[in-house]
Image 1 (cartoon, rainbow, N blue to C red):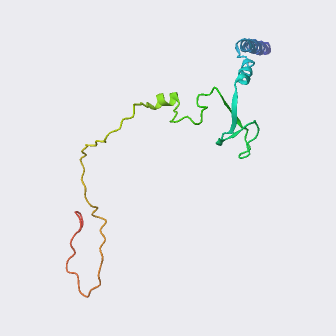
Image 2 (cartoon, rainbow, N blue to C red):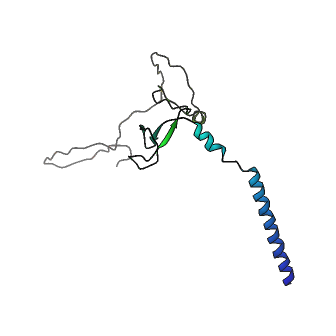
Length: 150
């Protein structure tokens, strides 16, 4: 019985070692190389550095922000929205597609709202304010204010 347990343990341990070696070999072969990304990052031209919490303030050199003690973020020349003075509103195309935004040309003209809605307009019968004047006398009868009052 002990030899059967030892054989099972050796079989499980051996298969785990072989599986781990195969996983490491496949990962080393198909893993993306990280050496090309920093070279492409260095070739981009930095326009200025800015604080993400205060994007309107610009700095010439990288470092810490004087406002929030955060690292400054570079603004690159090839970024699509790098021109801060560009007029208009920019919406990310993926957000436009997700929201179903449709754009049309602006036209000038009168607004025509000819819509009719059914409605009942009435006052709230329970929000009466009754002012009582002090007078000498007796009340003979109290009339109901609304339907359901006794």
